[in-house]
Image 1 (tube, helix red, strand yellow):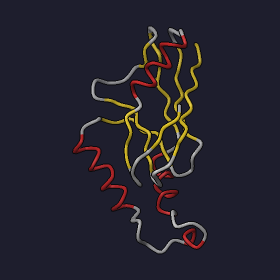
Image 2: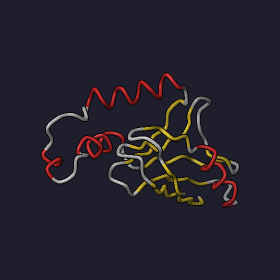
Image 3: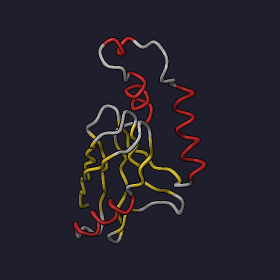
Image 4: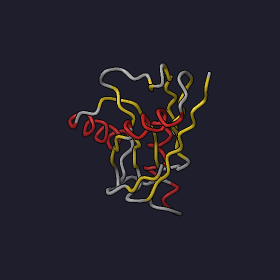
Length: 129
């Protein structure tokens, strides 16, 4: 799945697109692995509430500030994005039962842009059990 991000750092809810991919696969039981090949992007699962989304972005800035002297910034000025991606991870695995991804009531799947805006790719691998 292709995503065009619009800001430097943002959370993009991809839950409906993942659900559609699972439905279109026809697989009733298994797992769905959602991943990104980008070293400055991440996949996370959490609640899709505006305040919490802002809190997550604030947490990332507090833990790994953008305006700090990082060795990688001598090459590219985006070390903070790489380090944030290390914390968040590049994939999530979700069970599939009865043809649907199994998520909690308040859980959503997000692509996290950490060095945008850019065109990004999210991979969805569905494996039958």
